[in-house]
Image (cartoon, rainbow, N blue to C red):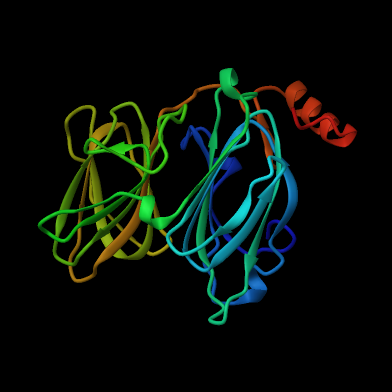
Length: 274
């Protein structure tokens, strides 16, 4: 339970550092029941991180201390760099069908960029490039660059690549990743088999994953996915590890406890926003 009473599935979080570095958490808030999400996430601060919200179905209204406000809906993304500090709210709207399907990813910022100026990007579905190959595999490039195509959001410090991949039944697909990046896949529909080639050149054992399963890969540079009788859809996310100390307190993530205490002290005194 998060925010003012939002029921969600935390795919990974505080206890999983540093396996997912530079990512801090992934929340899955898909629900057909408005009581699970209607209370939303009222005004709260962030510093030292980026939050990426991806909506499959439904609508979320947002506003922040930079003066940004709007609504993101089906297939749209909110990519917010909190940097030195931002105060915002995210309030789901209850639509007639009662459905809200979405995800939020937190990406850490290195010490050199913890106090960078905040920035905000709202991406509509038409801005997200989509690749489709001869086997019917579809790849939406939400962030980063893939196969020479730049996604909707680029120029992020930890070089994240955020893909939404759909593979039909009885098909195979090979993804090349950056060798030193941490890579994971989170299944959001169907099921399929995942494997990757490690740095020793040996293929690891295939792992079967279905809806709400996560696959974290060992170091390597290729990921192979294949399906049998079921189609498969999953989020594939990778990033360059920061490998720095983490001091984490709720919505604020810094490098030291002193920096964390300073942030909360500034929030109490009204000097948080720079």
